Image (cartoon, rainbow, N blue to C red; front, side):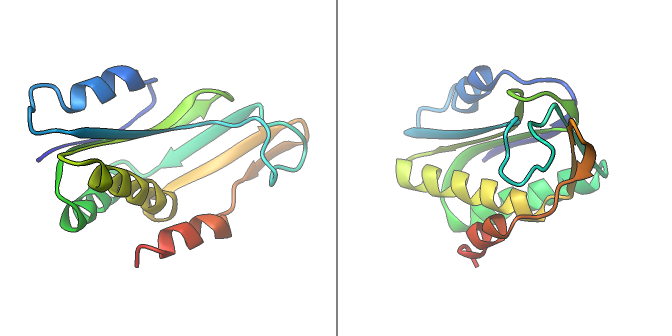
Length: 154
């Protein structure tokens, strides 16, 4: 299985990454992808719309955590390839923040694995988020909904 895990400041081309994941693999019958974007309006952001989101991480530790999530997905589903790209640094509303793309022989495994990876990275990957609004900056707390979503895979 081909695995690609990247943490980077630069934007990524989601379409090109999704196209590349199954290139040259005639056994891939499904590619499922998720692209998360920075939202300006979040229900839990006091102070109005978010003008900037800054993500921090520990290099090396973050990639290791993401790789462990992918490895766990491999034990649950038969997959052919996985790409996970997560951005760090300062991002503006509308910018892509994360890509999870999964290739499998069949759609059910690809859908489930992609959802699993996204749910797990929201709760297990060591990223710290800081939002800027008109009232200043604040650290984003973990959301109960994310823990609930990730917990269904236990």
